[in-house]
Image (cartoon, rainbow, N blue to C red; front, side, top):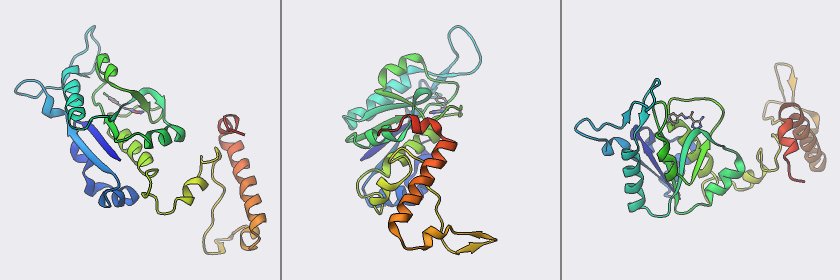
Length: 228
Ligand code: 4FM
């Protein structure tokens, strides 16, 4: 699967910088990440990409011409990419969308803006607008990286053990149950006896009950939206 990113900071997406399983997937050729410099499509001798807003107001906006040219350039060389604009105004990202995005082939074209926003006409070039959360960042690069990491780990072969995918948080719409590793007692805190019992039926029931309890306390919204 391919991830293309249009950005003013292509060096952020260098393969050598990716840790963990995305880094291994890159080296194994399971995924490809290609950054495309928006600056190359800037206007005039100064390669200008931004301008002041019509109607006044503070801050600068990304002009449409460089963004259109960059998107057309990438799609010309890589047809069929699903075009995603990262913006606080997009659909809130959730695991069900991540699963759908991981099935998009040949891959994704992520547009990471900067400044105070993009010219409204750029939205016509996106298949989907996605927000990674209700807070404001200075650009779309970190959101694009988060999306890449979330999607890449669902690409077949990327995750070491596919069983852990179905077992993980959100797979069944619940938060994870509490996890423990050695030692059995640490600073007076003991591992729950049931986990040492070897009784796998009991362990399974305990984990399910703990996951439900934790979800009810912390994220009641998840329980309401859960499929039966
Ligand atoms: C995005 C700044 C586009 C400028 C941003 C432009 C964000 C979020 C975010 C900042 N993106 N979820 N939250 N982007 O804050 O996705 Cl042009």
